[in-house]
Image 1 (cartoon, rainbow, N blue to C red):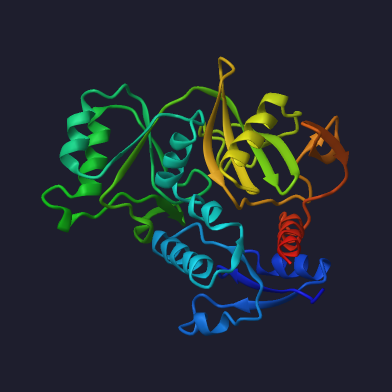
Image 2 (tube, rainbow, N blue to C red):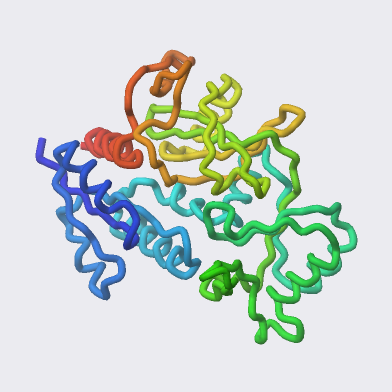
Length: 332
């Protein structure tokens, strides 16, 4: 069998070294494709069998361009990517994620997307506050806001859609502190759409991970701000069979092999999918412990079997590279 050559497409500053290390561990030849270069398409030479992709998670414009180019690679060049296009398309795309969850009847917080101010303001009187406002892109809870009342809702709507005209919209944007001075992050402004989500009272959030036939799960505990996202507080409780089954059945139905479901567990014991992400900030070489022992679950004979060991090296890219290599081998 001829050796594989893999293209690597990685947003600047995000895990390129880890992807390269994973390819070396798997003894794969690779070529780095610079999506920021004007000749990126010429770099996608015919000898490349498939592409590993690390998409962006900060600027909407860059994420949209990545999606467009990955779509081209997948549908015009007829080359596979890992994660797949669907897995990348739902990543950091809360509008699209909501559609996928709805279409596959996956339990999630009720979500509404308004595309004009009139419609948003008309609904402001009917909403059961508090509600959650989110931008389409943004990790770590940085673009999430609790709206406590009608006045706050209307103020955000005026910012997003423009007080006088959409042409004069300044958008809604988060802030960052510089020497204790709050500065507006204008480059991350949300304009011309408003995503509102039902407020759920949760005990904690579960991070449930599937890569190939490897399954992991751990708790994301609530931070001082009441959010699990961005808190970096981890609980190593063993995930229930119900959570593992929700992860497996959801990804199987969506035909996804590289996916993370962040799942709310409410105070009354219900589960709701809060996020779908094909890439996560995996800072540890393990993503689950059972009775203090790192490991993973393997799905075998319709059940989940625990396998002890360290399996998440290089921010889980070793698992992704191995699974992608197996997929390409199966194609011949």
